[in-house]
Image 1 (tube, one colour):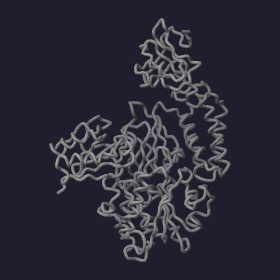
Image 2 (image 1 turned 90 degrees about the vertical axis):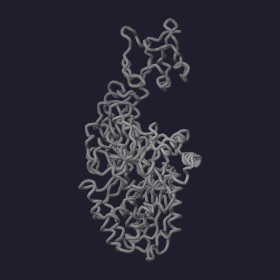
Image 3 (image 1 turned 180 degrees about the vertical axis):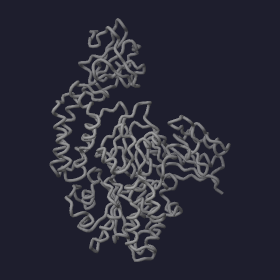
Image 4 (image 1 turned 120 degrees about the vertical axis):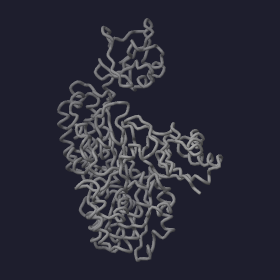
Length: 624
């Protein structure tokens, strides 16, 4: 008889941090201790806190362990399963209070979330359809096919207030209704899993941890809209998600949950995977359809909209992973229940991927209306290394940068748009005081420039010109009229581009100009980067009062520009030859090297302020 289950995270994050062999090591140790018949090991999908991996959860007591390696297993098994007490060394610490947390439900990262989309992730074996069925899997499909008409399903989705989670936030029920009313004998449904935003991994986690949920949602939607064929469009960079989707599709066919006469009705539905080649622009629905058709992924003018003329010229509906994953609970628990969560205009929950300079990175699902502060500091645990929060970028490379004064903004589509940002698919990149906002704008514009399909000149040429201006400012070569040119370019690209990539590419630039204009002025007027990031504006200097003469910096310097002052037994950097790679800065163990952008004051690797010794000319180069 089983007395306990060990849930081992087998999401991509934990596997990449060494979780591959954890299950086998646990199984061997349990067998050695004679416990294999009492304790079952289950490999699950992502549990959420990616920075703590590999992680595992012991059921039913809820003990949550972090950073578990094969070397920890013997002691963990002895302490927890033989002596009956938690192995405290592997318990997480609450990042806000530094208190040890014994159970998952007491860990603020989990306790402050409300899971609907992720309710099965981290709890079931995604490669076993029976575990999904045991948690009411495919019950919503059965209900739709045997108890509801197509119109009733669509009305239920409308009443729930569900909006598309792909970024635009268009009402899902209205979109389904347009497709339902479109004439034609052949219709298609598509799942957009071409998640390409830097720092975003929400869709990947759902597909890896609960693939049947997405399949069921697509089958319900296909029934409601009159489609009999569907496609899962997944980016090639998600091999684990593709593998588990393939297994899930095979199992669904074997159990009669895909294919012909589902639930002994006249409804037929076939579903297959299409793998994208990694182009960011294929997240746009018309480019995605062209890619499925085997053509170059380029956006097309609208109208006609996909519901009128889509894949192979037939009516087509496209929703993203989270939207499809929300269908099952809406049908089982009712539209009224779902509509009671969130805000007046935006119902339900949203999954966010927390990344950047934040203590708790990973996935967090919260109701709409939760503030940025609650997510970043309540769930995310605040900023790393005691640094100050500076900004958060939402919505991927097409999103805007939101400063500290707007941290209490509720998360919903309209509120973020007012700040110049977007919800996007749910990426949330947190930045601290060491982030240069000019460089941040340049990074995201460079991404959009590289990913532009090149079809329309405003995006193809405009983003390239924006990048050129930002590069010039970062090098300290900018002029005051460059800011006016940059704003004019942004507005032109935003208004004239064909698709959403070009229309939203200026957002990072416009928001950084709006909220951090002083940093642009410092780069242009003072030739200085306040955050000490822009390489051409940096200098690295050795503080002689701190230098111990260990020579590590000189040995690691790739251009051999660090020499010793023989009379002092200290080292110095020849500025004219320094390539500003920062190797010495990163390597110095004594905080003797400072990074400066104004030629006077600097900051050490751990952020400590540095000022030159009074009376010493720091510009002087001593011959050796």
